Length: 365
Image (cartoon, rainbow, N blue to C red; front, side, top):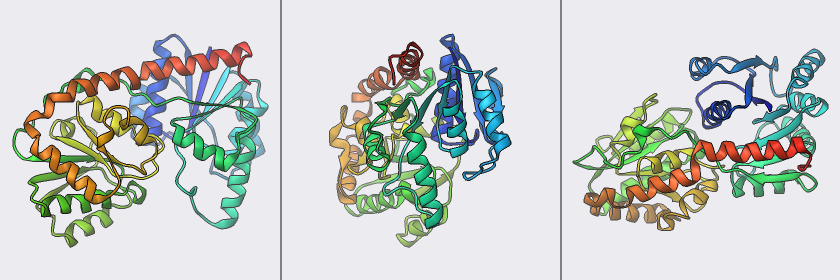
């Protein structure tokens, strides 16, 4: 079985990391795996080189690239593979894949509420093309029921095979440690890209209410991005500079997980939320909002009480954990076992293998 995964670049991001780890797991399982990139620029590139996975450059220059030479080159490359697995959208790439001899799988890793907005003409053209080509793939896969429901509502997908494959991550032995190293002040953590749709403002407001209600603790925000200045301004306006640490981007988030007592993921309409799974692998409770989309599907089976509706509810939940800090490890093993059973990369690799196998045997249409 010869598989080609297509992503935009090896930049830091949940999708990129997920696909690279999936490719590594598939290679370890005996499959022939390659990755096609639109750009080789990115923080994961050196890591990717170490994996001895063949890399291809797509030649695609942007979302509206329709170069006929690039199309022919892509189609020629795709003809070498049994499965072409697309992880983001390009009309040119989708057209070449569908016209090739390969079976085409498209995984959607998230769909923003209301769909991404932009110039109206570009928006209409791109979404029309996307709807056309998504309805021609052999199998459409979503990373959560939430993502699949949004995709069906927006793109139709009535006459093709659709499935849900929950994300998985590579289990690191060093992560399977329920013993938090923070023995002093109650510490609330966040690990995220700083974008407006991650709703970091909700965590800051809830933390402010937590302190006003008598809570004693500290908050560490790990990450960086376009909303960094807005986050910093909100912290200053609420006079929380001494209570919140802006840690910035880090290649070593494990050291922060070991300091956290709880992890909060305040975003809305997440496609999935790998950060929640990572926190569970560290034995941490995860607090999310009811409107967080795929995150609810991760948290609800294990700790539905940690799903809140408002900043005030989040503040009260933080107070609960602050009062029970000495019992940190009480359910840590349960969280780790839950994550291992449901969200390991090997489970994800096996589910995709069965889908690929069904396509090649002709049972998936």
